Amino acid sequence: MDWGTELWDQYDIIEKHTQSGLELVEKYVKFVKERTEIEQNYAKQLRNLSKKYNLKRSSKDEPECRFSSYQSFLDILNEMNDYAGQRELIAENMMMSICIDLTKYLQELKQERKTYLMEAKKAQQSLESTYKQLDSSKKRFEREWREAERAAQYAEKTDQDINATKADVEKAKQQAHMRAHVAEECKNDYAAQLQKYNKEQNQFYFSDMPLIFNKLQDLDERRVRKLAQGYILFSDTEKHVMPIIGKCLEGITKAGTNVNERNDSMVVIEQNKSGFERPGDVEFEDYSQGINRASSDSSLGTPKGPMDLLGKNKSKNFWLFSKRSKPTVTEDFTHLPPEQRRKRLQQKLDEICKELQKEVDQSEALGKMKDVYEKNPQMGDPASLASQISQTSQNIERLRGELNKYETWLAEAGGRGDTVRYKTHTFNNNGAHDGLSPDGAQSDESTPDPSQAIYAEFDDDFEDEELTAPIGKCTAMYNFPGASEGTISMQEGEVLAVVEEDKGDGWTRVRRSNGDEGYIPTSYVTICLNK
Image 1 (tube, rainbow, N blue to C red):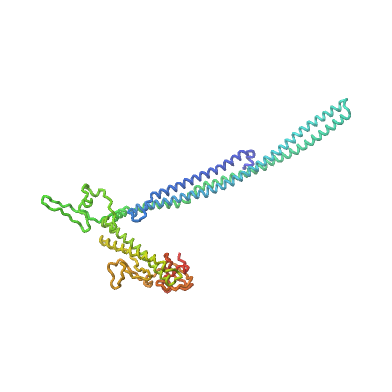
Image 2 (tube, one colour):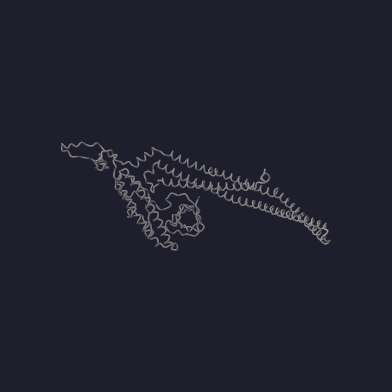
């Protein structure tokens, strides 16, 4: 069954139905757009919520950073942030696959429907025009036939009139004959117009309009089918991200299972253990016998009574529950209990050693660069490095002084002084190696200074170092003499193994197949690192 056969006389109904169908598509597109806005706002609120409660600190030294419950909470916030990203993805996919696609398809349907309705209107106008012509010919035929009848009656009346002349009778007959001829022509024209109209009407109702109605039916069915696909995509779009959302939720569950209350309790002990001993019994002081008050302190300054822990605040009876004033922070951390002081001093020493190692590495690089500039003036001016070398040397001496200071404090606090080992080879302002001891004096190999055991000196010769695995290859584009200490010569086209990347100083460490290692200018080679 089709519209052209069953609904041949329901043009207005079909026009209204197709219009209503297009409006439904528009309504669905608006619905999905509002859904995407809800998803985007939801995702934005989730991100803001995660950001608001993200308690990350700029420093990793915050006490709560080591608690598993704290880390799990951060994991939950990260998972919620990822979850928000999936909600944004849902909104984006719905907008692309439903809203934009349906809107484009809707415009095409509107244009197509407009074309069909214009064809129907054109056919209707053509039929109406033919009918007007038919009606006009009919009325003319009616009018001319009446005139012919009157002319015939007049001619007959004139013929019977005895007073009429022969000429009058002949004239009346001719007039009646002419009118009859005109009426006959109008009759034939009317018959022709009627035949034409009936033919066009048959074409209109049995061919033209059914074809247009069937096209509108096909358009409407395609519209319904496309809309149904949009309904399915509304669900599938969310289903596609469900596995990832599930992983986010699993991550939240895992964060909960990772919480270890026992370990958190141990962290509290480690972070807050003072190292003090519990106060001993308060001695009886017999003032009646004139006995002087006496007190004894442990080697670590352990308080022997609650008054010591209260800072002589005798108005408090239970020092464990009293509110203590915030201590003044000192550089040597003497404001902290012994155990916490040792930890902070050790941590500070590690930080200084790392910074010192960085300055030593930079000093070595600057010295090598200056040496190369002196051997190869075309590569650069050695004097341009003087200020950097001087500043680096000052930084090294400053850090060494701080290292000695904190080492002394750590020794006083009873620490072991396990600091990070670093290279002590530096370069003087002339680019030559200085075998300086940490205090800046010339070291004596036969009589090492025990106080400087914290520093470990490494031989700068590559033969004595443990071979590192190559991280790539390089091909020489130019010849390089390698006359400076620490460098290696190479010939154009030679292939070498890369063992250390350029650290920003313009030099790359390479190795030959025979084991020789050294630095070469990075700009002299093309490098291909292993993936």
